[in-house]
Image (cartoon, rainbow, N blue to C red):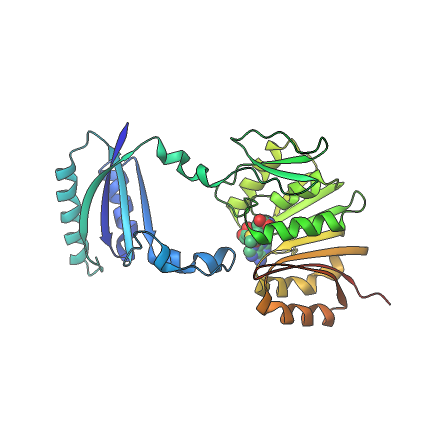
Length: 314
Ligand SMILES: C[S@@+](CC[C@H](N)C(=O)[O-])C[C@H]1O[C@@H](n2cnc3c(N)ncnc32)[C@H](O)[C@@H]1O
């Protein structure tokens, strides 16, 4: 089956109005807004990857609004209605941009599954493999643990080098069944890795609702009942101590976490940091030293640095 998609090159100022009009008045099956600003900020918001705008296919001038309809819907009638709507919105003084409207047909079966082609099994290490929910995998070692994952909307598919450095840090630091905090859990991947590596219990925190949902679902997918989730910023409102604290977040945010570490870390505890661009390392090193911590192990993959940290030894 196919879907009719109406594409409108317009301005972000009319996003809410077009969204409402499409769903409430035209019974669209779904809508999508591709905003230039989202692409420009995407790398920074999620993992500080530098986004090459030239590489993005069909990059909108400001906003491309897409509304999906049944294949049988009257394309010319819909185009005329959107034209009128844009004229009405312009009359209210809203920017409507280029106001170019076109129609196309897309295969319906691609809608939900298109993104799945980007995710495959990662045979990560002697101890861990990451397996998307829809794939089968035979462990390379009989005791290699499998992390089943549905990446959903949250960050943390296992593909990113920062996640992988944090997992290596966990493998290094997990020398007994430790109590672990995973700060900025995203999909829950590091919390699950910690549990599979033998953690006694794990607390996973994040500020985003999507992450809380994804982390709970993924913990369930792996049949793990020793992972708790808590929506909070960093370790605020957490009144517990941990043997291992792992955080894969931007350096700017790690700087805010550093002063919270001492009161949440048990004696002889370890901290794992990832998500640090090598240019930001000196700032992190300085803040760690000022808070009485020292770096035990430095790992690097391309621009990214991962650290295993402990309190300064007397
Ligand atoms: C780079 S992702 C890491 C996800 C996953 N832990 C991994 O390693 O793949 C960073 C996560 O930190 C979360 N985050 C950002 N600021 C935060 C804060 N102040 N407190 C808690 N979580 C935060 C984001 O919502 C995001 O899920």
